[in-house]
Image 1: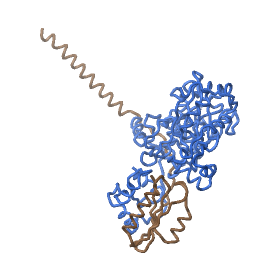
Image 2 (image 1 turned 120 degrees about the horizontal axis):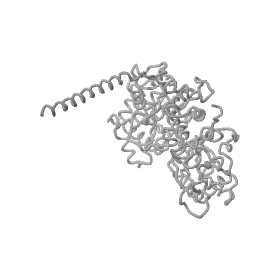
Image 3 (image 1 turned 180 degrees about the vertical axis):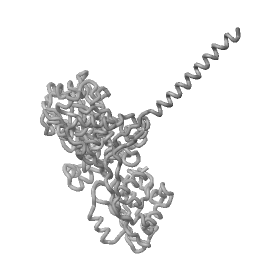
Length: 129
Length: 428
């Protein structure tokens, strides 16, 4: 009587076991068989970059002029004035100039750059924000 | 936050080792006492005192890397993969090439099918686009636009519209910290040909052409100009939800009592065109000053928009009105042209002198124009302090679009300025 009850149960267990193994193998096989595809690159063409060497540095700043230039974001002029003042206090042997670049931060100021180059001065440019 | 942005900008301009020092931000309208503290304080990135760092940057001998010259070429492979679709979706997402939603993978076959939507050769250069004036511009072809159109879920017949948008070289993801949005309006026969919705629900998610064309603009902005890289090419502090679809709509020309928008801009009615706008937001006019006429209701909305003009864009507003509103304005209020309504709104949305010149963006952008003698700002700066002055530089800055399905007489308006229009027919 007990054997009669046990055999069908074992049979069901075997069936489940085989089914799971079969499904697992099938899933693994299907994963292996999933086709590999290539797609087109969506990105635009990058421009080349022309490397610009940094300007040569002096050994020391004594006797030189350093421009603190504001580029025209809101309140940045006030910050650059404070920075120039703080720098001047720390570096009394350096001549410190504050300048606001003309226009908004969209505008170039070639006259100012020429002036700085002609004086062989150094520049700290404040950008943003 | 600006560390990545500043270093990336220096790299793209050929100075990858540019000596940069940072301060806490933002500093706009902060008191001088705080700015003084910042000036005497430390660089938040390196922890070094600011002045010491500046002295070192100005005097430290250059390294060999910093002296380097030459040209750096950067190329990209034509194909991505091979890999499974799932992995490629993951890769596109990880690389920031999507709008963070699943995309249609641009297989060669799908792109070839998309290219049937135009007679233009795949290798034709469409333009160069940049995320903003401080960034580099990337070049792209018809095929590159088609790839992004596939990704957005577009049909081939939408491609001329998407190419027209791409031909404007205008990103929908402008780099600014202010979280700009951009918008596209389609006019002409192409609207009907590709089944765009200009009626009920036109501004909602109810039409594949409206949805896919708007989405394509976002994807091509990211992938064809490098826009939308958080911290580098995108700094919008809050971002803008309109950027998912860029308010891509068609004007309801059939129900409008006025000339179509593109005709106002010099196109013929039988031509098709896209028109682009930029601004920040759109607000609804429901319930504003009931029973006072639509002109007055619209005026109330237009009185709250930002007033600044920049060297590249004048202040403006855009009114999006249901045909019922447009017909009422024409028939009951006497505005038989859009121009007359724009003129009335221009004259009746005045702002005080201080209300104009105290605005943060006006101080940054418009005041320098006034000081340089650019009109009408130079003359407006000379007005007495108690003067009332026009909010917008000219009536042309107030644009009107008819859109909607006459379910009810409502309108919306935004601080969107007109950028320009481009032919769709040139890309058929």
